[in-house]
Image (cartoon, rainbow over all chains, first blue to last red; front, top):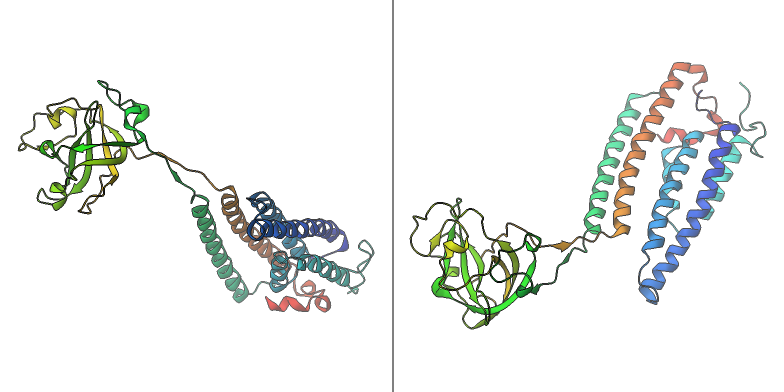
Amino acid sequence: MAAAPTAESVRGALLRYRIMAFVVGVTLLLFCVAIVLKYVTKTIESDSVIAIAHGWLFMIYVLLGLDLGFRMRWSFGRLALMTLSGMVPFLSFYAEHKVTGWVRDELGTPAGAAPAAEPAG
Amino acid sequence: MLTTRKWIALTVLMVALILAFGVLSGWQWQRAQRDRVEAAPVAASQVFTPGAPLAASAYGTRVAVSGRYDAAHQTLVQHGDGTYWVVTPLRITSGEAVPVARATVTSIGDPAVADVTPGTVVVVGVAQPFEGDPGTASTLPAGQADRLTAAGLALPYAVAGGWVALESQQPAPVVAAAPVQPPVSAGSTASIRLQNASYAVQWLLFAGFVIFFWWRMLRDDLRDDRRGADTERPRAATEPVRDVY
């Protein structure tokens, strides 16, 4: 099976996804702070710099998340959950933790060891 | 495993997502342009030079000018499509009169034709050049012309080197009439909101992702198919959610 996930092919994708999930999670929190500063306390005039940054980073995050998900051959529902969780402040950190757990459950841990979850035959 | 029903569903979903993302992209693009700022009017004296035709760089400039309409020398400029422009000279205290195209009417009996605001009015409109070709001698009755030229207006006093398509005036006209669509439209500074423009591009890219991942799933499925049934689901125990497809 060509796209059967192995620890080898997934390790890079998981690392990229985790880094991006962290970056997007932090950016999203900054965006939330900017929104409060703009609309509630009115201390800043524009939040568009962080909004634009978050937009592009989120796009990369979705791309990397889908890449990981496809390598793992996860279901659509799971892919959708991964994508949508990146839009919710704080939830993105939990989602990243959860996703890493799924990968380790399915491929064995530590990543790089023989995939324990895949019995021979 | 390539099952027809799954792929029909996936393809329908893909098309739906692409359409939705396209609509969202268009919506953000609309929003990006919502800051179109109308240029503020400048004094007509800055645009019209006495004795000279309107400079090409001034075509479409929004101007403000105050004066009194000269109803006696109003001209109806006929167009091929059966509409008329109501052009009334605006006498200003010093300098040349500025012809103002006040309204578009479909008949010479339209109430807007006679609705010449008396007294001093402040006109805001878009500066336009006269039509270059004076054309053949008009066979139309007096007070009508088939082109908007300085000569065609036949005014007994000096006329500015161009005319103004009325946008608004103070006091407002009594009769609400169709405005004159200026041949050279007014300058508006199209400021694009980067944030929304950025989102518009991203929605398009998301639509591209959909195509890419759809293709990738198809490719994986076809490969699985080719490898035969025994290797089809080697990881059945670890991927129970695949059946959600």
